[in-house]
Image (cartoon, rainbow, N blue to C red; front, side, top):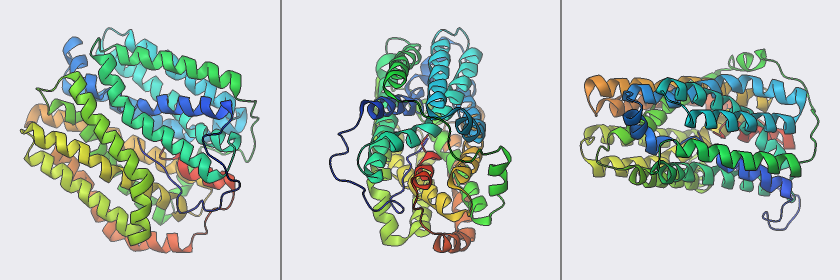
Length: 421
């Protein structure tokens, strides 16, 4: 779940004009991006309702995150293999169909196990779609590469921020509502993409499944991947445990809380991260943001029985996460001496599959150790990420210092794809 950026690597616009003046194909894909990014926080407001209606434990409903993220992480290894063989448009449409089908099936489910399984299928569709959407927007958009990226980031931010709010609005009527809502919206996006997006044949080198694993041999990329695992354990512990730490809050209130979280995440990713990067440097700014997120989780752990503390810390965490998401992605794309799509796949695989563990462990701890435990777990995990950064920051700095900035459109596109979810 995260906001990508290439502020450090995209500098010269190709043409002027407003980035809002785009072909219908671009708007069709951008709309689909908004709906796809909604999936990250959509289920947050209805976690407690699903647990109540389907007689499930908190740790069982946490698997809605785990199955989604784990499948998405593994699928990131094959998205490049698929798109370089069947072409971007077919890959996009395949991803959309999978989301439509599995979101609808999740809404029709009668057991928590079925919802978990269909949510996993949703994750597969999301991986295929998101990993291809940015390159499609860039290739079809008018104006500069930077303007196309702004449009993509705007779609991402709107989706992340609106997901919990839409989940709350539809979830007040029924916990099934958000799932059916996504299925309907994605059907509209599928039709628009199929009609307005021209055919996009496969181009470029055909990647293999082994390429991302070879990329992880590079020390800087391995260090950043380890950091990503630790901070995502905290990230998804917060998403899963937050609603259960607010027993008096209803579906709509939780939706608004996580809307504030998503809004700050989007703003920090697009605007705050580049400012901090220019002022302090990538590694120093990243270390500071990860440290502040660990501190935020620790405050939540200490004040977990006070709803005001939990609500405030959830919203504030969005700012730290937005900065971390952008800076760690930039560092990953600049530090590894491999093709950027390969680095993106390697990083996304490690990050998502590792982070998938967080929600289940966090809510298991909550069941057995109390409401404070998930946030202590998250704080400790993120703290380990700080330790890794402090120990390996020099290696990352040297790799970034020696890495040339990407000049091709393909390279700049790939710098965004890895953190689009």
